[in-house]
Length: 434
Image (cartoon, rainbow, N blue to C red):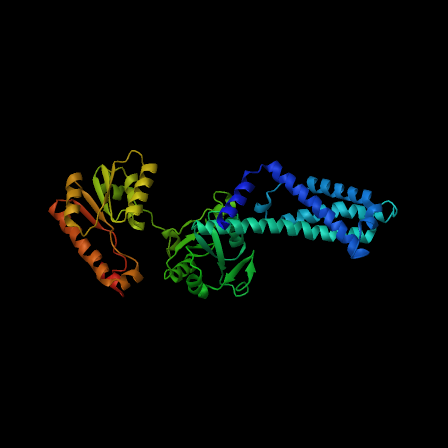
């Protein structure tokens, strides 16, 4: 019932035209102006003020309300959509109140009989400022909470922002207005910010992330420190690897400043950002010897390494590309990606396991594969440590199956890609790769 009510309110608000919303806001402000002047008289003269006592000032009050409304309109107070405005509107409201009430207060010193008492005008100005800002913040908060409530029921990604600085706050403001994300908390290394509330969101130290995930599970951690050096970024990512979450980042600061990217363009962390050196780009002429004009098969083609390799191969114009992948969704994603970006590519997507030697052999024979890139392997250290038998079975036996099947079917080239951690291994995954 509550979800239906929240949805109805959001749909009603979205269905209103800009002019209708502006009219509602003007009416709301007029009511605020009436309330503020009544409270100003009450505070100045008598807390049990009656209508007869302010009746002699009715003309001046109506004039004050008309002047306030006109000044507010001319200052553009009704131009932005309230639930998308930031705290910058405080300055505009303050100026509007100063211009409307300030002029009348000044004139009251020279024509005492023609205007409301100066003390009433001063109190009214202060009340108007507080009430107008308070109502705007209330509307903004209500819509924000409604969006969070609806999105939480729809299971939209729950996000923690790493970095409560300027970029983090800008990202938070952007995400708070986006119904497709649910913002949970900030994380920051700065002790001065920890345990504080920034833009209504709590800031936690990194040491409490695991505990926070146990209490209120979140899906993403977004690194909002675009000028962070690679070494520190690598440390942060390694500290987050124990949590079952996705790690995202914002575009580099140079792209944000140049206008090439916006702050809310969240993306996955690029491996080149974590290198302790400059990225070494591949040589197309070397890769092309085993790819261009040849039938190529990639095992584990839907994984993080395999999918990027498929894109590189597609660019080098193979005779055909065969993607061999165990995970259905990963296979679907890379197949769709290649279809959108390489429409002329002859490609074939196969659901298969490198442990199934007969199926792999049939695929190789059917497409007369000339080059195999073997990337199918388990690579996440904590998972392989917790499942050692499956790690060894896939990484060792799966690689042996691919090699022997390639030999039996006269495949010209077989390249083993997944050899990370194989040098001086300190864990089961590294030993299985070695």
